[in-house]
Image (cartoon, rainbow, N blue to C red; front, side):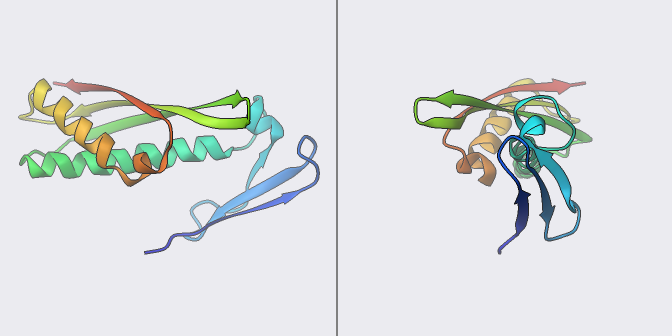
Length: 141
């Protein structure tokens, strides 16, 4: 299975602009720039997109883990915070923090935390990162 994303960049690193798109068309010519990536300009940026991808992947992986324990979530809400730092050899994604809150009827906190940990380790996007991935998992009644 192959999935495609594409980008077009025009201009210099600071003054230029780019557009990113997905094969499915869900994201089409979304603007990104130096300011949207490293400051607070309008548009998206690669790290934000990685965060959304990781949050989506993890949420689905957690749903699968819950199913293996005969549990079904009413809701799973995940935010992935992607940290970029300047290192000696350039910029790098150094860590990702997953914050997940889920409503899972019949689940106890210990089982939920264990299944969330399994999902964090098994999510294909988690395996992609060469960074520390931390997590806060909250089960709500």
